[in-house]
Length: 179
Image (cartoon, rainbow, N blue to C red; front, side, top):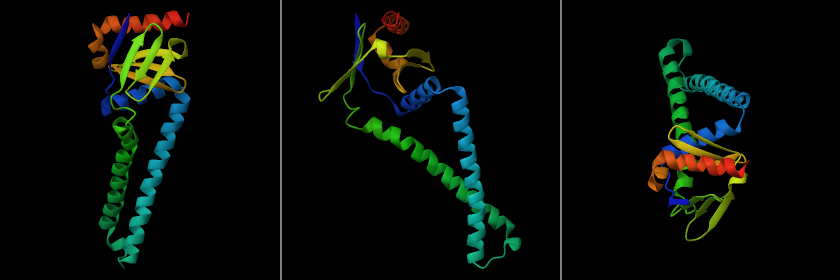
């Protein structure tokens, strides 16, 4: 028995899958450290925004005490622009990966042997014994492989047959291979 289908992730699924893989791979303490780092960076951006607006006002010959509203508005504009730019830049690598030649025409076959990805140019195979864990959450089934993983959206797995039966079989293959 095997399941085969085209592997066509949406950007939303890829981002959600990457988050779930990070949660599975990195311990909670490490994720909190990363969140704290992000908070400190955000705070630094806010402080930089206020310093930058003060410098702009000074260069324009405007006294800070006379134009408090302008000072705050410039600082907030800077902060908003940086945050919006960061959001775009954070998603850009995922979008580029999904649009790359590597992902075009990708086909996946799941069998008792493992996971095989292929297209007309190349192929790869991962044995179930190399998958450290298999998880299902938020409309995805995640196969953790080292410090990365594969994300299989429910909508794609459903193409192979009854979704719950397909998922149960994947978990069974993984458990048998790692027994």
